[in-house]
Image (cartoon, rainbow, N blue to C red; front, side, top):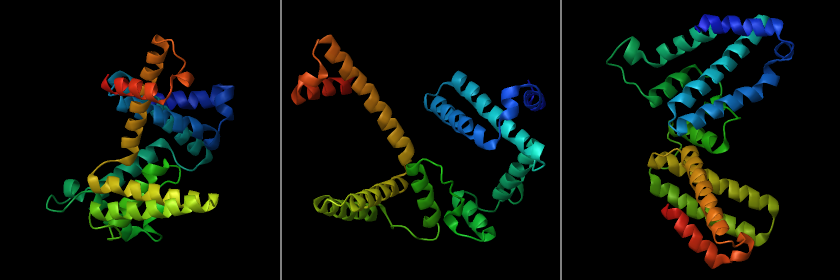
Length: 246
């Protein structure tokens, strides 16, 4: 099926399907987000079959949202494609205009800043996962030198934030505790930029490792016929260490 056929399919659904006719951009928003994260999960698994399928589902959502906008007279899918094509050409003059020009994310940010009337951080979507958003905001402000010079500066900041969090915990004020814990996490997210690691990716992978190992602990407890609630800390630790080896 070609892209034009997909466009026609979406138009047919909007015309002939009662459920699809009832939808608008806000009602379809959760499906767009769901398909995005399913595509990311398939990419993480490095599963080409699932990735192809999930990218197709995501593409359908994009075409559907463009159709909704077209019906309102706002724009259509051709304008979406034309707009992003023009944007990418502008962001890559070293490819499409002059090979001697520098390229890279820093150059993109500088060009975007030259056209921006508001803040540098205005363009970071608020609905990004918080750790990823912190990383992107940090990247943007770092382009104007608002950053630590090296990772040691971040480690020092982490120690400072840890001390303030401990102080807040001793004080017992829930509002201040939440505030200081947020500052600690924000500083930790900055470390990722300085060591070349995406905090969002690292935490997602760590979550997956933990879940896999915990499932192994559960299976070991079941095999030993010992309820986890009754196993005790030492036994749980032994199972955990065994799970880490597998």
